[in-house]
Image (cartoon, rainbow, N blue to C red):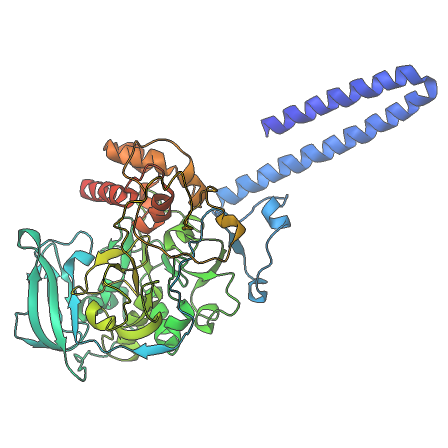
Amino acid sequence: MKNGINKITFLIFFLTTSLAASAQNSGGESSNYFVITLVVVAALILITVILQVSDNLLRIEAKQIGVERKGVNYSIFPKANEIAREKLPRHTANHPVTVLKKGHNILLEGQIDDTTVHEAQVNTFAIQPKNFIGMSPIPKMVVEVGENVKAGDVLFFDKKRPEVKYVAPVSGEVIAVNRGEKRSIAEIVILKDKEISYRDLSSFDLEGSSREELVNYLLETGAWTVIRQRPYDVVADPQDTPKNIFISTFDTAPLAPDGNVVVAGRESAFQKGLDVLNKLTEGEIFLGIDAKDESPSKAFMEASGVTTRLFSGPHPAGNVGVQIHHTDPINAGDKVWVLGVQDVITLGAVFSEGRYNAERVVALTGGELNTAKYVRTYQGANIKDILADNITEDNTRIISGDVLSGKVKTTEGFLNFFDDQLTVIKEGNYHELFGWLLPIRPRPSVSNTFPNFLYPDLRFEADTNTHGEKRAFVVTGQYEKVLPMDIYVQHLMKSILMNDFERMEGLGIYELSEEDVALCEFVCTSKQPLQSILREGLDVMREQG
């Protein structure tokens, strides 16, 4: 405001001096025009000052009563992006839309063109303890090799939190307990029965029971494990009550599955899951919806008991972390819960179907597949089975998740617990001589060295070559151009490397998860492993309490 008043003072001085000089040169009659003009200018300046003061008071009042939110303009004056806002589908007319400009969409070959969901023939499934951040390397096993289990039977629990039980996604025989480094348990493998049998769950009166009884029921059935808590992205603590719960119904990552396809046919279970979540928080359930989607599912647009938030923009607009930042940011001491669409469905099925139903719609994507398609399977499906006869060649990289934040797998591995996408691309194990100097081959990039901006709809053939090695961690400003959050990522990463706890907290580490900085890692000139650095910082902060 001080700068605005200084500008107005300068404007008065300039106009007064100019008009006075003009009046002296023109004679008596012009002096009347000078007085009139001066009065008009003074009136306009007075109105401007009143509006400016009112605008500031409005912002202060909004902050004091607690209604101020990021992405909402509490001002008399419209922003430039509100005046020249992009055209959005009709269903957004009655909803506030958060328009994000920062980010970048990576268009790759291997997208799914047919929304038909095929039945996958998978024989083995596995639960992997390492998928759950913070779990003891060797959890307490409840079953042994050779035992038969039903879907929903307890397999193991964490010794640090024995009340949280991890259950079988399918019925069958436990055929292996594979171990990793230092005898840690890597996988509990189940050979699926031809016809799945489910553990009988006792009925539960959702309306007539207390929150504590509901929490205990979810812990006993194994459904609690689909709820993740931020900060740290760990399985939610049963002792905590979340400030809010956030669910993103769309994913903007490369080749990500369509939320409308995922929820189709299971709308009732999704709504029941929302009803359950409403009983677990005193805050709000925020449902993030894609404002650019021409026809979002009615399960999302007509969901009850939630507050919808529409977002428009390039990746990472679909990340739940970005949506939290622009809705109600995480501060020190805050705890919020997040779920994916299929996690909500699994939670709801416990009540609507009376069983732990770990069914998943998985998107098989990537340029090295014969056919990119949706398949229906269960959590932890075997990758060799799910990709049977569908890979074009051997020199490939298999990723559980998307190409930016997914984890490398082999054909003998299993889909990660929270993933609903499998991506197969070329392995980039080659050397490109002077690739930076001779940009001949088109590739996904934000650099104008490659004229990608001339072909906005062109899909690229991706591989894993990083086109360079790790370099000096220099200040470039690249991260801030692609991350639509008020966070200085480079400063945060350096504070993590220095183990500066206070700076980590002050720079917003609680708001981030690996997927939020994955695009920053993609554009990084210094080739820094930002996701690994962030996880190190989050683990340190979690251990410090």
